[in-house]
Amino acid sequence: MTNWLPDLSTGSGPLYQRLADSIESDIDKGVIDAGAKLPPQRDLAYDIGTTVGTIGRAYQLLRERGLVSGEVGRGTYVLGQRAEAPRPDVEPGLQGTRPIDAPSGKLRFDSTAAPDVGQGAVIADILARTAQEHPHEISSYIRDFPERWYEAGSRWLARNAFHPSPDSIVPTLGTHAAVMAAIAALTMPGDYVVFEHLTYSQIARSAGLIGRRTALVSTDDNGIDPDDFERVCAQKHPKLMFLMPTAKNPTLVTLSAERRQAIAKIAREYNVALIEDDLYGELTDDPTPLLAEYAPERTIVAGGLSKSVAAGVRGGWLSCPPAYRHRIRVAHKMMTGGLPFLLAEVGTRLVMSGQAGEIRKRCIAEIQARLAIVRDVLAGFDVKARDNVPFLWLTLPDPWLSGTFKNACLAQGVLIDDEDEFKAGRSEQVFHGVRFGVSQPRQSKDVAGGVAVIRRLLDEGRAGYDSFS
Image (cartoon, rainbow, N blue to C red; front, side, top):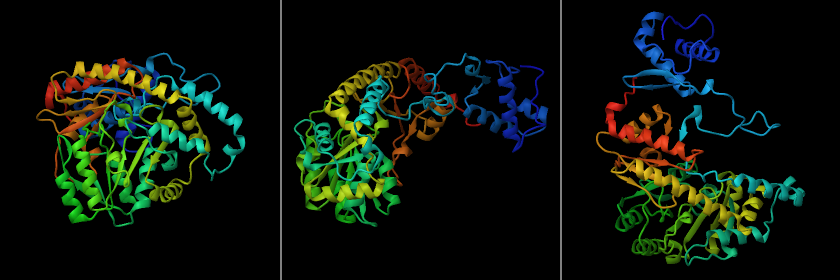
């Protein structure tokens, strides 16, 4: 574009912020058209008498607002979404709300919640009937849980030959809260909890907030190394280990029956409790016996609805040995403030009616279709996928580093997770991998577009990304 300069005479804040605000204002007014190329950073810096760094910060702010895109060697261009006709996101009467998408219009490949397959209509019907039938329970606190809440957990957690009794179930406010309640109940501040180097690290971080210490156990291509687990037990004397034996997040490794047996034996010898997170296992048809079948007296199985039905329902359950159940239920109440009747009842009705199972089937079909797109686009690269599971683990080719690749994707409007997001503690191990999910984009074409960005960056190598552009 030519003969354009920003008006910096108004506004407040640092110069880069006023510059970004001025450009945004001119885009809104139509002074700068969709598709227009913004001046090169050096040229604009010279014209307004500032540094290239200031212009770069302003352009980055505009990218974060979803107003422009930039590619090395091509320049910075105004995106066209503001010129499109407005599309109603909600029904009349609900203005002021909209679907919660990625920040600044970015594509969410950093989430693995259940895909939208129309479950909202089913849940809306259950919510309406629950409110009509249980107005008093909704308006008050619930201290005595109905038996159906336990039966729902027993049904949902059952897999392969594992069929927990309703008497073993603790209904919880999601799987994360379930696991944290178990950690709080079975350990004391200062106790060690064992984690793999790469795992669902939010649990390790949360455990650290309540004073638990992390002990890391090594893994290989087949999962946890039993010999190293025994070493950790002998040296650190941990009270508990958290693991995901089936379709582990983020690497998708599934432990063999032999390794599960070995881990159960070592845990029994050193009196270590085990938390088996089966959240992704629920999506698979993996026939391997659950860890709980090898060590039922010390294994807590956690699962819920977030990956296979609807994350917003926050439905979760634990199955635990009888000696643990009361302590964990009390700890869950102390940690969360209590289980809301409405959410627990909705989750229960979804399971008991069979609708949760039907939604899971639809979610799996949608995930499979999206995985097929990724496998096709990324053919030839070292990418691990597992049928029915909504994320993939990509081992990056040289010279990419995990964090740099994440930033390169972010600059192109795609949010993924680097390996540091999954490190349970400070680790000397480097994996050179990234995880990205396929369940959150609204349509399959969005998945294809995001994966095309990933493929282009892989093909171009580091030449395709310059953090100072």
